[in-house]
Amino acid sequence: MNTTKQERPNGYDYTRLMLDHIGGWGSVFNGELIYPRQLEIHLPGDGKRACNFNCYYCQGRLLKKPLGMDVGKVFGIIDELGGAVPLHVYGGAYTEPLLNPWFLSLLKSTKRHGSKFGIHTNGSLLMELQKSVGFIGELCSISDSEEDYISVSIDAGFPQSHTRSKGLDRNCFDEIIKGVALLCELRGAHIYPAVRFSYIANTMNSTRAELKNIVRIAREIGVDSVRFSIPYDLYGKPFDKVRAYKKNCEIPWDQSLREKLGGILSTDTNRPFVFYIPPSCQDVDRMDFRQCVYSYYQITLAADGWMYNCSSTASPSFKFSRLGRQTDNIEEFNRMVMKSHNPRFDPSVCFRHGARCNRMGLEINLAWEERNGLRSK
Image (cartoon, rainbow, N blue to C red):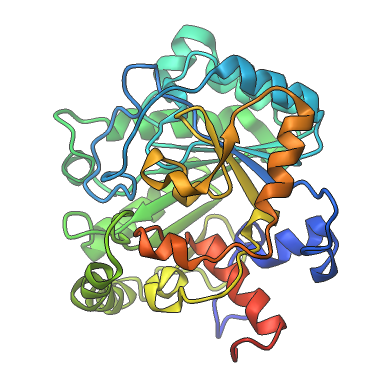
């Protein structure tokens, strides 16, 4: 570990992960069927609500949020793929996967075919599901790789600020910590699945004492990493408004948070690894590239029942990004994968509709342009 410049953990080096999966840049736009590294699955909550939290900074807050997914087709395509997509990521956009009654069965299907899983959750249902179906124990029993992970968006170091940040009317923080602690305990010495905290720092949760406290909790219960960031602007806004947000919020918050995190971030590889991803990783003013190669990193089964070429646009608010209706027919699925690998797709259509890249897409697309001499490093 270079202690003079903090490195990101391997699971956050998105360009390298994609290139390792596809075999290098020479595979891009070569006309062959190449499955992406990950299949992102936005489960439709419990069919009545997409999520049980109300975070004001949720990037999908302004988007249309229908819940029309046929989960049976998700089971079907997982079986048809047979592990060909190595990572299945549950959660994203406007959804909370632990709400879905089929979630544990889907995880088992993922593992039965040899794929790894990722889970993005607010963590509020961990203990409830453990009591009802032994969820945490089952999760640990089916995980067989450090590439399996669960990321809990904790976003607070104290109960009071958690309640305010998440738009709740009761304390869920203590129950979440209890669930994560049990998860770390039950997984035992093999240290999988990896357990991560993500922490979006805002005006309600960012005292230095609170930042230090969540790191202390993570260390005491055995969490592997804590990732700090600040809220990005909501998806679906015109870029001029996003630029104003960048000027008025992102830049000053970034400077303030860096000061508060002084002495808190990791300088070695000990657990938990504590790091910061700055807003430059999703800088709207860098979103001017001419091609999109993010399709080689992921493809999305959205909660509305459609397949999208990008998790950031997986809503009917961005119908232009649809590849087709979700299917359990492998030939139809393959056609949509090939459709997503389109060298003629112009990313400016996304930007005109207020659709922005996530940090993975931005990093990968910038690397592609630098590789082809379209911009300087």
